[in-house]
Image 1 (cartoon, rainbow, N blue to C red):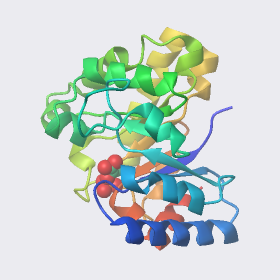
Image 2: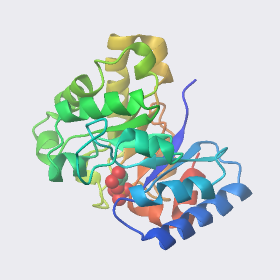
Image 3: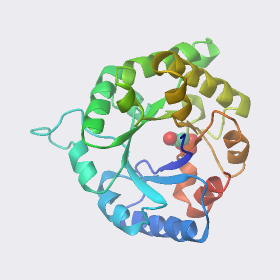
Image 4: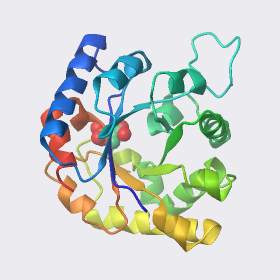
Length: 251
Ligand code: PEP
């Protein structure tokens, strides 16, 4: 069964105390509601263990925003998938466009990260999406297809069943410029179509595909109403508990 998810991506925001306070606020709001989706908090590494302990894990799970492409050893400054798992986190966001653009993460590196995350019991939230020039050149479908083929299509059906995809047009991230509901649905249906060809209709139907890019309390309802949009990956609006909860309540 396909799961609806609203996942916050805090990026490099909030010190430890601020992060715990935000998690407590989201937890309190979620306790008063009956959320129709799984709630995920994508926190910086240092918050993971404390936030995991703070939230009600029957409603809220925790995600890291990255993991190392190596298992363990002499990789100063890196954080392994096993370490993340040991904090209580369930997910790891991989392939975010900021990681691809600023930290040189290629599809080949991401494939390694996906493998290591899965081997350590973490579920990847795998991000894909085109930059503006690619959309303007009508290459957005090709770009997204290769990101998926090179990042996750080597997986067995059982492994692929643990992946959440997040379509995030890069031109919509943090810009206040959202893809239209029709543009989101068109790409999500395209993505589901290529999953059908690779893994069959059942697995494609079960795959959660999130939309990300300036999703907010005002546009979430229309975006989530699309048959192939199964929730959102939320940046800016996840930093305010009230806004994040309003997006969750859009389901
Ligand atoms: C993101 O970075 O994943 C994102 C969707 O950011 P924003 O919601 O701020 O556009």
